[in-house]
Every structure is written in structure tokens, then in C-alpha cells.
Amino acid sequence: MARQSQAPASDTDDAQDDDEHPEQQGRLSLHIAAGGRADERLQRSSVPRQTAEMPPDPRPVESVINDLIDNPVRTEDVRTRAPSAPGLYAWWAPPAIVPDLVGVPHPTVPDQRLLYIGLATKLRSRLASNHLRRTGSSTLRRTLAGLLLDEQGYRTRWTDRVVLVDDDEARLTEWMGNNLRVSWCEYPTPGEVEGDIIRALRPPLNLDHASGPSTQVVKTARRRYHDSAGPRP
Image (cartoon, rainbow, N blue to C red; front, side):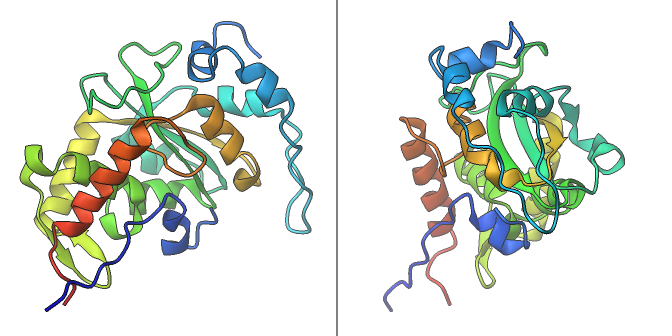
């Protein structure tokens, strides 16, 4: 029987799964990520459009970046500290975690480098209920599972999509708790600035708005994760 193929999700599939539509000197990450030209590029960023639902945020994009990367916390603190508000989030890890995918270092927290940036309409539920629980509704989890497939021996299965088996969902959540940190900032219309922030900071696990050699590594990892479940029933 021929295999029915379903293309691995892009970054924006996170939003579709869960109704989540997708200045200071010394901010070293901006200059490393953008070759010293981030400030120039960010100054050309468009101002978020005003909508009937909520007013625009007047902060320049570089200010949003500074708020976004401030104070990464452990995953166990997400439920008590993350707000139930729209915004952006950033995932961080030590250099030894997926060492072939080099992200920019955190400017103030030692031994942390950027892995992934996303947006949410409700930060607390996006982080706690999706990224820390279910591969079916988290592109980040699927990417990590694909990168760690051999090392961790994760097992997958089909539902309406490819997910980890229940025991391995729990193991991946535990691995994330042991190895990753997350930061966030509130922003009323995160989709208006997400692309500019990703292009400035170049998180290695993102594909949308991203470029460079890491994108092929991420595509391969997502494909391996998808194919590990075998043909769709």
C-alpha cells in the first residue's frame, strides 16, 4: 500500500492547531544575529496597524525585543508567571543542547542561547498547555522530537496527525524542563512584529521568516519525526 504523505508543519501550523494566529547598548544578540545591522533594519520596521479589537502598541520593535529576551525562567514557573495575554515568547537552551544549531547567546544570562520564537493570543495556555504537553499542537515539540529521535528513542503514532506516544510525551516534557528556559513579553498584535524579530535574532529552530543553513537541518528533523510513524492508516 502506497504511503500517504502529509507534509510536516510549518511554524505557523502552531497557530492553526490552537487558534493562535500566527536600544540598549550591550544587547549583543541583535548585533550577532544581524551582522551588526539589526538596529538599522528594525528602524525601518512598519508600525503595527491599528485594529478595531485592540489599540496598537507604540513601542519600537527593538524595545519589544529587549522585553522579550528579558529574564528567561524555568518551565515549572510558566503556569504561575506567564500572563493570559497576547504576546511573543522565546525558548533558550545551553550550547550543549542541539549543538549543531547555533543560536545567539543571551546578553545577560550565562550559558543560554536562543532556540525558537513564537507568538500567542494567550501566552500562558500556549506555553503550558501546548508546548509543554502535546506534540500535536506544538511545532517546537515536533522539531525537538525529530532532532532527539535517535538520542531519546522517541516513539510516534498516528491520530489525525503524527504525535508522540503518551509515555514519550511525558518524557519530552521532562526533557524540556531539565534543559530549556523560556521568556516572553506581552504585545497586543504579535503577528505584526514576529517576522521582524525572527529576522533580527535568527532563532535556529524557526522556519517561517528564517533563512540560513539551519533551516535545512530543521526541515530534515521535522520530516524524520513525521516519517517515524510510518504510513498513515
